[in-house]
Length: 178
Image (tube, rainbow, N blue to C red):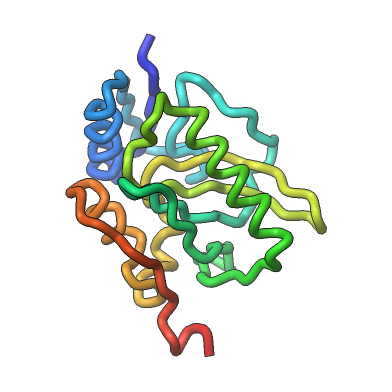
């Protein structure tokens, strides 16, 4: 049995294969399975060692850019109509537990160190209740919201991580926050 089972659509093949290279470089095994279509676009990948996930994945994503020095947390992405929007502003008392949960899940899922790359932690937030949905081990569709908004965007972050290039900070473009 592989450490990771990754199920992805053919359209996601490059991103899934890049993720598989990162996991293999970390000394873990990966089994890849391809499908022409997925369940409503929601299920991109499943772990061979499943995390405890809620029934409804949620419509918010916390991007975690795991660098050689540790995690950088980007602004939350939310679903907006047929697309996605970044930033979604959360209060500090909402962000801090989310950061701690994301870090804990990634550290316990991997034998240290966590492979560098971009992870999207999907979650739901109801009042003060935080429900973890799933963890996407590469910049999936919601990462499109970072294009032209975050510097560097999540796709470039993933590429930089795969190449071992340092990322010092994540910034939201000034016009977006104004």
